[in-house]
Image: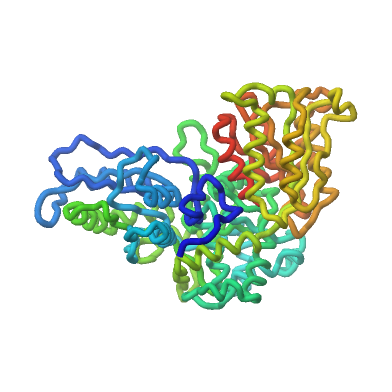
Length: 593
Protein backbone atom coordinates (compact mmCIF):
# COMPACT_ATOMS: atom_id res chain seq x y z
CA UNK A 1 0.00 0.00 0.00
CA UNK A 2 1.44 3.35 -0.94
CA UNK A 3 1.84 5.76 1.96
CA UNK A 4 -0.02 9.03 1.92
CA UNK A 5 2.91 11.14 3.04
CA UNK A 6 6.67 11.32 2.96
CA UNK A 7 8.41 10.89 6.31
CA UNK A 8 9.97 14.10 7.56
CA UNK A 9 12.88 12.19 9.03
CA UNK A 10 13.67 10.28 5.85
CA UNK A 11 16.90 11.41 4.17
CA UNK A 12 15.64 13.56 1.34
CA UNK A 13 18.17 12.17 -1.12
CA UNK A 14 16.38 8.82 -0.93
CA UNK A 15 12.80 9.97 -0.55
CA UNK A 16 11.59 8.69 -3.91
CA UNK A 17 8.37 7.14 -5.07
CA UNK A 18 6.24 8.72 -2.35
CA UNK A 19 8.76 7.85 0.34
CA UNK A 20 8.64 4.07 -0.13
CA UNK A 21 12.40 3.52 -0.15
CA UNK A 22 12.67 3.28 3.62
CA UNK A 23 16.39 2.77 3.85
CA UNK A 24 19.06 4.28 1.65
CA UNK A 25 21.78 1.82 2.69
CA UNK A 26 24.49 4.26 1.59
CA UNK A 27 25.11 7.17 -0.71
CA UNK A 28 28.38 6.15 -2.36
CA UNK A 29 28.68 3.91 -5.35
CA UNK A 30 31.41 1.31 -5.06
CA UNK A 31 33.61 0.53 -8.01
CA UNK A 32 32.65 -2.32 -10.27
CA UNK A 33 34.43 -5.59 -9.66
CA UNK A 34 36.08 -6.66 -12.89
CA UNK A 35 36.38 -10.32 -13.84
CA UNK A 36 38.87 -11.73 -16.32
CA UNK A 37 37.69 -11.04 -19.88
CA UNK A 38 40.45 -13.12 -21.44
CA UNK A 39 38.58 -16.41 -21.75
CA UNK A 40 39.96 -19.70 -22.92
CA UNK A 41 36.53 -20.45 -24.44
CA UNK A 42 33.78 -18.38 -25.98
CA UNK A 43 30.62 -18.34 -23.84
CA UNK A 44 27.48 -17.10 -25.49
CA UNK A 45 25.56 -16.48 -22.25
CA UNK A 46 26.50 -13.28 -20.39
CA UNK A 47 25.18 -12.94 -16.84
CA UNK A 48 25.32 -9.62 -14.98
CA UNK A 49 25.24 -9.91 -11.18
CA UNK A 50 24.88 -6.99 -8.79
CA UNK A 51 25.99 -7.64 -5.20
CA UNK A 52 25.83 -5.73 -1.93
CA UNK A 53 29.17 -4.15 -1.19
CA UNK A 54 30.26 -6.20 1.83
CA UNK A 55 30.62 -9.29 -0.37
CA UNK A 56 31.08 -7.85 -3.87
CA UNK A 57 34.88 -8.27 -3.90
CA UNK A 58 34.59 -11.95 -2.98
CA UNK A 59 31.80 -12.45 -5.54
CA UNK A 60 34.01 -10.87 -8.19
CA UNK A 61 36.81 -13.34 -7.38
CA UNK A 62 34.41 -16.27 -7.40
CA UNK A 63 32.92 -15.13 -10.73
CA UNK A 64 36.40 -15.08 -12.25
CA UNK A 65 36.98 -18.58 -10.90
CA UNK A 66 33.64 -19.69 -12.36
CA UNK A 67 34.44 -18.12 -15.72
CA UNK A 68 37.75 -19.97 -16.04
CA UNK A 69 36.31 -23.31 -14.96
CA UNK A 70 35.10 -26.06 -17.29
CA UNK A 71 31.45 -25.84 -16.19
CA UNK A 72 28.78 -26.43 -18.83
CA UNK A 73 25.15 -25.36 -18.74
CA UNK A 74 22.15 -27.63 -19.09
CA UNK A 75 21.32 -27.60 -22.78
CA UNK A 76 24.94 -26.94 -23.73
CA UNK A 77 27.27 -23.99 -23.81
CA UNK A 78 28.71 -21.98 -20.95
CA UNK A 79 28.23 -18.66 -19.21
CA UNK A 80 30.42 -15.71 -18.37
CA UNK A 81 29.50 -13.99 -15.09
CA UNK A 82 30.32 -10.37 -14.34
CA UNK A 83 29.86 -8.84 -10.87
CA UNK A 84 29.29 -5.19 -9.95
CA UNK A 85 28.86 -3.83 -6.44
CA UNK A 86 26.23 -1.44 -5.08
CA UNK A 87 24.80 -1.03 -1.60
CA UNK A 88 21.51 -2.86 -1.12
CA UNK A 89 19.35 0.20 -0.54
CA UNK A 90 20.81 2.05 -3.52
CA UNK A 91 20.28 -1.03 -5.70
CA UNK A 92 16.65 -1.35 -4.58
CA UNK A 93 16.12 2.31 -5.44
CA UNK A 94 17.79 1.84 -8.84
CA UNK A 95 15.75 -1.27 -9.68
CA UNK A 96 12.57 0.63 -8.83
CA UNK A 97 13.63 3.44 -11.17
CA UNK A 98 14.56 1.20 -14.12
CA UNK A 99 18.26 1.02 -13.17
CA UNK A 100 18.95 4.59 -14.24
CA UNK A 101 21.84 6.67 -12.94
CA UNK A 102 24.07 3.82 -11.73
CA UNK A 103 26.53 3.63 -14.66
CA UNK A 104 26.50 -0.12 -14.05
CA UNK A 105 25.26 -2.91 -16.33
CA UNK A 106 21.63 -3.90 -15.92
CA UNK A 107 21.67 -7.00 -13.68
CA UNK A 108 19.89 -10.27 -14.22
CA UNK A 109 20.79 -11.42 -10.69
CA UNK A 110 20.67 -9.33 -7.52
CA UNK A 111 22.43 -10.32 -4.27
CA UNK A 112 21.34 -7.86 -1.53
CA UNK A 113 22.29 -8.20 2.12
CA UNK A 114 18.83 -9.23 3.26
CA UNK A 115 15.41 -10.31 2.00
CA UNK A 116 14.15 -7.16 3.69
CA UNK A 117 15.21 -5.41 0.49
CA UNK A 118 13.23 -7.71 -1.79
CA UNK A 119 10.15 -6.88 0.27
CA UNK A 120 10.75 -3.16 0.02
CA UNK A 121 11.21 -3.43 -3.75
CA UNK A 122 7.85 -5.23 -3.92
CA UNK A 123 6.27 -2.23 -2.19
CA UNK A 124 7.85 0.13 -4.71
CA UNK A 125 6.62 -1.95 -7.64
CA UNK A 126 3.16 -2.17 -6.12
CA UNK A 127 3.01 1.61 -5.66
CA UNK A 128 4.02 2.09 -9.29
CA UNK A 129 1.29 -0.31 -10.47
CA UNK A 130 3.68 -2.75 -12.12
CA UNK A 131 4.36 -6.46 -11.74
CA UNK A 132 6.71 -7.16 -8.80
CA UNK A 133 10.33 -7.82 -9.66
CA UNK A 134 10.86 -9.82 -6.44
CA UNK A 135 7.60 -11.73 -5.79
CA UNK A 136 9.08 -14.84 -4.16
CA UNK A 137 11.30 -16.14 -1.37
CA UNK A 138 14.86 -16.75 -2.48
CA UNK A 139 17.69 -19.12 -1.53
CA UNK A 140 20.62 -17.82 0.51
CA UNK A 141 24.24 -17.94 -0.52
CA UNK A 142 25.45 -17.04 3.00
CA UNK A 143 24.04 -15.94 6.35
CA UNK A 144 25.03 -13.64 9.19
CA UNK A 145 22.89 -13.37 12.34
CA UNK A 146 22.57 -10.14 14.25
CA UNK A 147 24.43 -10.24 17.59
CA UNK A 148 25.14 -7.99 20.55
CA UNK A 149 28.92 -7.53 20.33
CA UNK A 150 30.73 -6.64 23.56
CA UNK A 151 34.36 -6.36 24.67
CA UNK A 152 35.37 -9.80 25.89
CA UNK A 153 35.45 -9.12 29.67
CA UNK A 154 31.98 -7.57 29.56
CA UNK A 155 30.56 -10.15 27.20
CA UNK A 156 31.83 -13.05 29.27
CA UNK A 157 30.35 -11.51 32.42
CA UNK A 158 26.95 -11.20 30.71
CA UNK A 159 27.17 -14.78 29.46
CA UNK A 160 27.78 -16.04 32.99
CA UNK A 161 24.24 -14.97 33.84
CA UNK A 162 22.95 -17.68 31.54
CA UNK A 163 20.42 -16.94 28.80
CA UNK A 164 19.65 -13.22 28.70
CA UNK A 165 17.23 -11.32 26.50
CA UNK A 166 17.33 -8.15 24.43
CA UNK A 167 15.69 -6.17 27.21
CA UNK A 168 17.95 -7.56 29.95
CA UNK A 169 21.12 -6.67 28.05
CA UNK A 170 20.14 -3.46 26.27
CA UNK A 171 17.13 -2.14 28.10
CA UNK A 172 17.30 -2.69 31.83
CA UNK A 173 20.83 -1.72 32.75
CA UNK A 174 20.98 1.93 31.63
CA UNK A 175 21.01 4.14 34.71
CA UNK A 176 22.17 1.51 37.15
CA UNK A 177 24.75 0.52 34.60
CA UNK A 178 27.17 -2.28 35.21
CA UNK A 179 26.34 -2.23 38.92
CA UNK A 180 23.44 -4.55 38.05
CA UNK A 181 26.08 -7.03 36.86
CA UNK A 182 28.25 -6.55 39.95
CA UNK A 183 30.69 -4.16 38.26
CA UNK A 184 29.81 -0.59 39.32
CA UNK A 185 33.33 0.54 38.41
CA UNK A 186 32.45 -0.04 34.73
CA UNK A 187 29.96 2.82 34.93
CA UNK A 188 26.84 3.33 32.85
CA UNK A 189 25.61 1.02 30.13
CA UNK A 190 24.96 2.37 26.64
CA UNK A 191 25.22 0.71 23.26
CA UNK A 192 25.68 1.60 19.62
CA UNK A 193 23.50 0.72 16.66
CA UNK A 194 23.14 1.89 13.11
CA UNK A 195 20.32 4.18 12.13
CA UNK A 196 17.66 1.86 10.65
CA UNK A 197 17.00 4.33 7.84
CA UNK A 198 20.60 4.00 6.59
CA UNK A 199 21.64 0.47 7.45
CA UNK A 200 20.47 -3.10 7.00
CA UNK A 201 21.85 -4.11 10.39
CA UNK A 202 20.23 -1.07 12.01
CA UNK A 203 16.88 -2.05 10.54
CA UNK A 204 17.39 -5.68 11.57
CA UNK A 205 18.20 -4.58 15.13
CA UNK A 206 14.96 -2.57 15.28
CA UNK A 207 12.95 -5.53 13.99
CA UNK A 208 14.59 -7.84 16.53
CA UNK A 209 13.68 -5.43 19.33
CA UNK A 210 10.02 -5.51 18.31
CA UNK A 211 10.01 -9.31 18.12
CA UNK A 212 11.57 -9.50 21.58
CA UNK A 213 8.87 -7.15 22.84
CA UNK A 214 5.99 -9.30 21.52
CA UNK A 215 7.76 -12.54 22.56
CA UNK A 216 7.20 -14.19 19.20
CA UNK A 217 9.50 -15.10 16.35
CA UNK A 218 7.05 -14.56 13.47
CA UNK A 219 3.86 -12.82 12.36
CA UNK A 220 4.65 -9.32 13.60
CA UNK A 221 1.61 -7.13 12.86
CA UNK A 222 0.75 -3.46 12.62
CA UNK A 223 -1.32 -3.75 15.79
CA UNK A 224 1.77 -5.03 17.63
CA UNK A 225 3.56 -1.81 16.72
CA UNK A 226 0.96 0.32 18.49
CA UNK A 227 0.62 -1.86 21.60
CA UNK A 228 1.64 0.40 24.56
CA UNK A 229 3.63 -2.42 26.20
CA UNK A 230 5.57 -2.96 22.97
CA UNK A 231 6.34 0.70 22.41
CA UNK A 232 7.46 1.04 26.03
CA UNK A 233 9.85 -1.91 25.58
CA UNK A 234 11.31 -0.45 22.39
CA UNK A 235 11.57 3.03 23.89
CA UNK A 236 13.44 1.65 26.93
CA UNK A 237 16.02 0.00 24.70
CA UNK A 238 16.44 3.04 22.44
CA UNK A 239 16.98 5.17 25.56
CA UNK A 240 20.34 3.44 26.12
CA UNK A 241 21.73 4.23 22.66
CA UNK A 242 25.00 6.18 22.84
CA UNK A 243 24.40 7.62 19.39
CA UNK A 244 23.21 6.25 16.09
CA UNK A 245 25.86 5.39 13.53
CA UNK A 246 25.56 5.83 9.78
CA UNK A 247 28.08 3.00 9.25
CA UNK A 248 29.02 0.48 11.93
CA UNK A 249 32.24 -0.36 10.04
CA UNK A 250 33.51 3.19 10.63
CA UNK A 251 32.58 2.84 14.29
CA UNK A 252 34.54 -0.42 14.52
CA UNK A 253 37.57 1.11 12.81
CA UNK A 254 37.58 3.88 15.43
CA UNK A 255 37.21 1.29 18.20
CA UNK A 256 40.14 -0.74 16.84
CA UNK A 257 42.32 2.37 16.60
CA UNK A 258 41.49 3.32 20.19
CA UNK A 259 42.13 -0.24 21.38
CA UNK A 260 45.56 -0.47 19.79
CA UNK A 261 46.55 3.04 20.89
CA UNK A 262 45.44 2.45 24.47
CA UNK A 263 46.61 -1.09 25.01
CA UNK A 264 43.03 -2.34 25.02
CA UNK A 265 41.47 0.36 27.18
CA UNK A 266 38.97 2.39 25.18
CA UNK A 267 37.55 5.67 26.44
CA UNK A 268 34.39 5.12 24.46
CA UNK A 269 31.15 5.12 26.43
CA UNK A 270 29.57 2.21 24.53
CA UNK A 271 29.35 -1.13 26.30
CA UNK A 272 27.99 -2.97 23.26
CA UNK A 273 27.27 -2.65 19.54
CA UNK A 274 24.43 -4.39 17.72
CA UNK A 275 25.76 -5.67 14.38
CA UNK A 276 26.25 -8.65 12.08
CA UNK A 277 28.26 -11.56 13.40
CA UNK A 278 30.59 -11.40 10.38
CA UNK A 279 31.87 -7.99 11.52
CA UNK A 280 32.78 -9.33 14.96
CA UNK A 281 34.99 -11.86 13.19
CA UNK A 282 36.58 -9.26 10.90
CA UNK A 283 37.25 -6.96 13.85
CA UNK A 284 38.87 -9.72 15.90
CA UNK A 285 41.04 -10.78 12.95
CA UNK A 286 42.45 -7.26 12.55
CA UNK A 287 40.73 -6.63 9.22
CA UNK A 288 39.31 -3.35 10.57
CA UNK A 289 42.45 -2.25 12.41
CA UNK A 290 44.81 0.45 11.05
CA UNK A 291 47.09 -1.05 8.42
CA UNK A 292 50.75 -0.30 7.91
CA UNK A 293 52.18 0.09 4.41
CA UNK A 294 52.29 -3.25 2.63
CA UNK A 295 50.11 -5.07 5.18
CA UNK A 296 46.98 -6.96 4.12
CA UNK A 297 45.45 -6.49 7.56
CA UNK A 298 46.12 -4.65 10.79
CA UNK A 299 47.01 -6.06 14.20
CA UNK A 300 44.42 -7.99 16.09
CA UNK A 301 42.90 -5.85 18.86
CA UNK A 302 44.16 -6.28 22.39
CA UNK A 303 40.60 -6.78 23.65
CA UNK A 304 38.53 -8.77 21.15
CA UNK A 305 34.76 -8.63 20.87
CA UNK A 306 32.48 -11.54 21.72
CA UNK A 307 28.98 -12.16 20.39
CA UNK A 308 26.09 -12.37 22.84
CA UNK A 309 22.99 -14.14 21.48
CA UNK A 310 19.73 -12.96 23.10
CA UNK A 311 17.51 -15.76 24.36
CA UNK A 312 14.38 -14.67 22.45
CA UNK A 313 16.19 -15.09 19.16
CA UNK A 314 17.73 -12.81 16.57
CA UNK A 315 17.31 -11.56 13.04
CA UNK A 316 19.32 -13.14 10.26
CA UNK A 317 20.78 -11.33 7.27
CA UNK A 318 20.21 -14.00 4.64
CA UNK A 319 21.98 -12.69 1.49
CA UNK A 320 19.38 -13.95 -1.01
CA UNK A 321 20.11 -14.96 -4.60
CA UNK A 322 17.46 -13.14 -6.63
CA UNK A 323 16.95 -13.83 -10.34
CA UNK A 324 15.30 -10.74 -11.84
CA UNK A 325 12.74 -10.50 -14.65
CA UNK A 326 15.49 -9.04 -16.89
CA UNK A 327 16.97 -12.57 -17.22
CA UNK A 328 16.07 -14.47 -20.38
CA UNK A 329 15.69 -18.25 -20.48
CA UNK A 330 19.39 -19.03 -21.00
CA UNK A 331 20.45 -16.47 -18.36
CA UNK A 332 18.12 -18.20 -15.90
CA UNK A 333 19.88 -21.47 -16.63
CA UNK A 334 23.24 -19.73 -16.10
CA UNK A 335 21.99 -18.17 -12.85
CA UNK A 336 20.95 -21.60 -11.54
CA UNK A 337 24.39 -22.97 -12.35
CA UNK A 338 26.18 -20.01 -10.73
CA UNK A 339 24.02 -20.47 -7.61
CA UNK A 340 24.98 -24.14 -7.50
CA UNK A 341 28.63 -23.15 -7.84
CA UNK A 342 28.42 -20.61 -5.02
CA UNK A 343 26.88 -23.13 -2.61
CA UNK A 344 29.53 -25.79 -3.19
CA UNK A 345 31.88 -26.49 -0.27
CA UNK A 346 34.99 -24.81 -1.69
CA UNK A 347 33.20 -21.52 -2.33
CA UNK A 348 31.30 -21.67 0.95
CA UNK A 349 34.62 -21.94 2.81
CA UNK A 350 35.64 -18.62 1.28
CA UNK A 351 32.48 -17.03 2.63
CA UNK A 352 33.38 -18.59 5.99
CA UNK A 353 36.80 -16.91 5.87
CA UNK A 354 35.00 -13.54 5.84
CA UNK A 355 32.92 -14.45 8.89
CA UNK A 356 29.76 -15.67 7.17
CA UNK A 357 27.79 -18.78 8.04
CA UNK A 358 27.06 -21.03 5.09
CA UNK A 359 23.93 -21.09 2.97
CA UNK A 360 22.30 -23.50 5.45
CA UNK A 361 23.11 -21.36 8.53
CA UNK A 362 26.02 -23.58 9.65
CA UNK A 363 28.89 -21.75 11.37
CA UNK A 364 32.49 -22.76 10.61
CA UNK A 365 34.35 -23.77 13.74
CA UNK A 366 36.88 -20.98 13.06
CA UNK A 367 34.07 -18.44 13.23
CA UNK A 368 32.82 -19.71 16.59
CA UNK A 369 36.39 -19.75 17.89
CA UNK A 370 36.64 -16.08 16.93
CA UNK A 371 33.29 -14.70 18.12
CA UNK A 372 32.41 -17.18 20.86
CA UNK A 373 30.08 -20.19 21.04
CA UNK A 374 26.40 -20.04 20.21
CA UNK A 375 23.71 -21.28 22.65
CA UNK A 376 23.63 -25.02 23.23
CA UNK A 377 20.30 -25.35 21.47
CA UNK A 378 21.42 -23.30 18.48
CA UNK A 379 20.04 -19.96 17.34
CA UNK A 380 16.38 -19.09 17.00
CA UNK A 381 15.68 -16.81 14.04
CA UNK A 382 12.92 -14.23 13.69
CA UNK A 383 10.92 -14.32 10.47
CA UNK A 384 11.07 -11.20 8.26
CA UNK A 385 7.90 -9.17 8.84
CA UNK A 386 5.56 -8.25 6.04
CA UNK A 387 7.12 -5.33 4.07
CA UNK A 388 4.20 -3.06 4.98
CA UNK A 389 4.84 -3.78 8.67
CA UNK A 390 8.51 -2.87 8.21
CA UNK A 391 7.47 0.40 6.60
CA UNK A 392 5.06 1.17 9.45
CA UNK A 393 7.78 0.30 11.98
CA UNK A 394 10.12 2.86 10.49
CA UNK A 395 7.34 5.42 10.35
CA UNK A 396 6.97 5.03 14.12
CA UNK A 397 10.65 4.70 14.98
CA UNK A 398 11.16 8.46 14.77
CA UNK A 399 8.93 8.92 17.81
CA UNK A 400 10.57 6.10 19.81
CA UNK A 401 14.25 6.73 19.14
CA UNK A 402 16.37 8.47 21.72
CA UNK A 403 15.99 12.25 21.54
CA UNK A 404 18.89 14.70 21.37
CA UNK A 405 20.34 17.94 22.76
CA UNK A 406 22.17 19.47 19.79
CA UNK A 407 24.17 22.70 19.77
CA UNK A 408 25.07 23.77 16.22
CA UNK A 409 28.11 26.02 15.77
CA UNK A 410 28.12 27.58 12.29
CA UNK A 411 31.28 29.21 10.91
CA UNK A 412 30.63 32.81 9.83
CA UNK A 413 34.25 33.78 9.16
CA UNK A 414 35.10 35.92 6.13
CA UNK A 415 36.29 32.95 4.08
CA UNK A 416 32.67 31.78 3.90
CA UNK A 417 32.18 34.54 1.31
CA UNK A 418 34.29 32.64 -1.24
CA UNK A 419 32.44 31.33 -4.25
CA UNK A 420 31.24 27.77 -4.80
CA UNK A 421 29.87 27.89 -8.33
CA UNK A 422 27.33 30.69 -8.45
CA UNK A 423 26.88 30.81 -4.65
CA UNK A 424 29.04 31.62 -1.67
CA UNK A 425 30.28 28.97 0.72
CA UNK A 426 27.96 30.36 3.36
CA UNK A 427 24.93 30.08 1.08
CA UNK A 428 25.74 26.47 0.23
CA UNK A 429 26.39 25.58 3.86
CA UNK A 430 23.24 27.38 5.04
CA UNK A 431 21.08 25.55 2.49
CA UNK A 432 22.53 22.19 3.57
CA UNK A 433 21.97 23.00 7.23
CA UNK A 434 18.36 23.97 6.54
CA UNK A 435 17.69 20.72 4.68
CA UNK A 436 19.49 18.62 7.27
CA UNK A 437 17.66 20.19 10.20
CA UNK A 438 14.35 19.23 8.57
CA UNK A 439 15.23 15.61 9.34
CA UNK A 440 15.37 16.15 13.11
CA UNK A 441 12.57 15.13 15.43
CA UNK A 442 10.24 17.80 16.77
CA UNK A 443 11.03 16.53 20.29
CA UNK A 444 14.76 17.19 19.93
CA UNK A 445 16.28 20.25 21.62
CA UNK A 446 18.44 22.39 19.33
CA UNK A 447 20.48 25.56 19.76
CA UNK A 448 22.47 27.66 17.29
CA UNK A 449 25.75 29.55 17.70
CA UNK A 450 27.67 31.54 15.10
CA UNK A 451 31.45 31.93 15.31
CA UNK A 452 34.36 33.68 13.65
CA UNK A 453 36.47 36.08 15.73
CA UNK A 454 35.81 39.42 17.41
CA UNK A 455 34.37 41.78 14.79
CA UNK A 456 32.74 45.21 14.76
CA UNK A 457 29.35 43.51 14.89
CA UNK A 458 30.49 41.07 17.57
CA UNK A 459 33.13 42.82 19.71
CA UNK A 460 32.33 40.86 22.86
CA UNK A 461 33.83 37.53 21.74
CA UNK A 462 34.42 35.10 18.87
CA UNK A 463 31.12 33.23 19.24
CA UNK A 464 27.55 34.20 19.96
CA UNK A 465 24.34 32.43 20.89
CA UNK A 466 21.85 32.97 18.09
CA UNK A 467 19.11 30.59 19.27
CA UNK A 468 19.06 29.32 22.85
CA UNK A 469 19.19 25.54 23.34
CA UNK A 470 15.56 24.51 23.69
CA UNK A 471 12.61 22.91 21.94
CA UNK A 472 13.39 22.56 18.26
CA UNK A 473 12.05 25.57 16.35
CA UNK A 474 13.21 25.08 12.79
CA UNK A 475 11.58 28.21 11.42
CA UNK A 476 13.37 30.40 13.96
CA UNK A 477 16.73 28.71 13.37
CA UNK A 478 16.37 29.04 9.59
CA UNK A 479 15.53 32.71 10.01
CA UNK A 480 18.58 33.36 12.21
CA UNK A 481 20.89 31.55 9.78
CA UNK A 482 19.56 33.63 6.89
CA UNK A 483 20.34 36.84 8.80
CA UNK A 484 23.89 36.02 9.86
CA UNK A 485 26.76 38.35 8.88
CA UNK A 486 29.95 36.85 7.46
CA UNK A 487 33.19 38.48 8.71
CA UNK A 488 36.39 37.76 10.65
CA UNK A 489 38.75 34.83 11.20
CA UNK A 490 38.04 31.29 12.43
CA UNK A 491 38.10 30.86 16.22
CA UNK A 492 37.62 27.12 15.95
CA UNK A 493 39.23 25.86 19.19
CA UNK A 494 37.69 28.52 21.45
CA UNK A 495 34.23 27.86 20.02
CA UNK A 496 34.39 24.08 20.26
CA UNK A 497 35.62 24.29 23.85
CA UNK A 498 32.92 26.76 24.87
CA UNK A 499 30.14 24.86 23.10
CA UNK A 500 31.23 21.60 24.69
CA UNK A 501 31.25 23.22 28.15
CA UNK A 502 27.85 24.79 27.43
CA UNK A 503 26.33 21.35 26.81
CA UNK A 504 28.10 19.79 29.79
CA UNK A 505 26.47 22.45 31.97
CA UNK A 506 23.10 21.53 30.44
CA UNK A 507 23.68 17.80 30.19
CA UNK A 508 20.54 15.65 29.91
CA UNK A 509 21.12 11.94 30.66
CA UNK A 510 17.89 11.05 28.82
CA UNK A 511 19.20 12.47 25.53
CA UNK A 512 22.10 12.24 23.09
CA UNK A 513 24.17 15.35 23.88
CA UNK A 514 26.18 16.65 20.93
CA UNK A 515 27.95 19.67 19.48
CA UNK A 516 27.80 20.00 15.68
CA UNK A 517 30.47 22.18 14.09
CA UNK A 518 30.38 23.26 10.45
CA UNK A 519 33.49 25.09 9.26
CA UNK A 520 35.34 25.86 6.04
CA UNK A 521 38.72 26.48 7.63
CA UNK A 522 41.26 25.83 10.32
CA UNK A 523 41.88 27.61 13.62
CA UNK A 524 43.07 31.19 13.01
CA UNK A 525 42.59 32.56 16.52
CA UNK A 526 45.90 33.17 18.29
CA UNK A 527 44.28 33.74 21.68
CA UNK A 528 43.35 30.05 21.72
CA UNK A 529 45.68 27.99 19.55
CA UNK A 530 46.44 24.97 21.76
CA UNK A 531 45.04 21.84 20.11
CA UNK A 532 46.37 19.48 22.78
CA UNK A 533 44.52 21.37 25.50
CA UNK A 534 41.33 21.36 23.44
CA UNK A 535 41.54 17.59 22.90
CA UNK A 536 41.95 17.13 26.65
CA UNK A 537 39.03 19.47 27.38
CA UNK A 538 36.60 17.66 25.06
CA UNK A 539 37.79 14.14 25.91
CA UNK A 540 34.84 11.87 26.50
CA UNK A 541 33.51 11.49 30.01
CA UNK A 542 31.73 8.10 29.83
CA UNK A 543 29.40 9.16 32.65
CA UNK A 544 28.40 12.42 30.94
CA UNK A 545 29.20 11.99 27.25
CA UNK A 546 29.06 15.12 25.11
CA UNK A 547 30.20 14.24 21.60
CA UNK A 548 31.50 16.57 18.93
CA UNK A 549 30.48 16.04 15.31
CA UNK A 550 32.21 18.09 12.62
CA UNK A 551 31.55 18.78 8.97
CA UNK A 552 34.67 19.91 7.12
CA UNK A 553 33.33 22.15 4.38
CA UNK A 554 35.36 23.05 1.31
CA UNK A 555 39.00 22.35 0.62
CA UNK A 556 40.41 24.93 3.04
CA UNK A 557 39.06 22.90 5.97
CA UNK A 558 41.60 21.08 8.11
CA UNK A 559 39.79 17.73 8.10
CA UNK A 560 42.58 15.91 9.96
CA UNK A 561 42.29 18.29 12.93
CA UNK A 562 38.49 18.15 12.93
CA UNK A 563 38.75 14.35 12.90
CA UNK A 564 41.05 14.49 15.93
CA UNK A 565 38.60 16.71 17.81
CA UNK A 566 35.65 14.48 16.97
CA UNK A 567 37.45 11.27 17.92
CA UNK A 568 38.61 12.70 21.24
CA UNK A 569 34.96 13.09 22.21
CA UNK A 570 33.89 9.79 20.58
CA UNK A 571 32.06 11.74 17.88
CA UNK A 572 32.69 11.74 14.15
CA UNK A 573 33.95 14.08 11.43
CA UNK A 574 32.28 14.12 8.02
CA UNK A 575 34.32 15.03 4.96
CA UNK A 576 32.55 17.55 2.74
CA UNK A 577 35.74 19.18 1.49
CA UNK A 578 34.11 18.60 -1.90
CA UNK A 579 31.19 21.03 -1.39
CA UNK A 580 28.91 18.89 -3.57
CA UNK A 581 29.01 16.31 -0.76
CA UNK A 582 27.71 18.62 1.96
CA UNK A 583 24.05 17.60 1.62
CA UNK A 584 25.08 13.96 1.93
CA UNK A 585 27.26 14.76 4.94
CA UNK A 586 24.39 16.51 6.71
CA UNK A 587 22.05 13.58 6.10
CA UNK A 588 24.58 11.19 7.64
CA UNK A 589 25.30 13.56 10.52
CA UNK A 590 21.65 14.11 11.41
CA UNK A 591 21.08 10.36 11.25
CA UNK A 592 23.44 10.06 14.24
CA UNK A 593 20.72 11.57 16.43
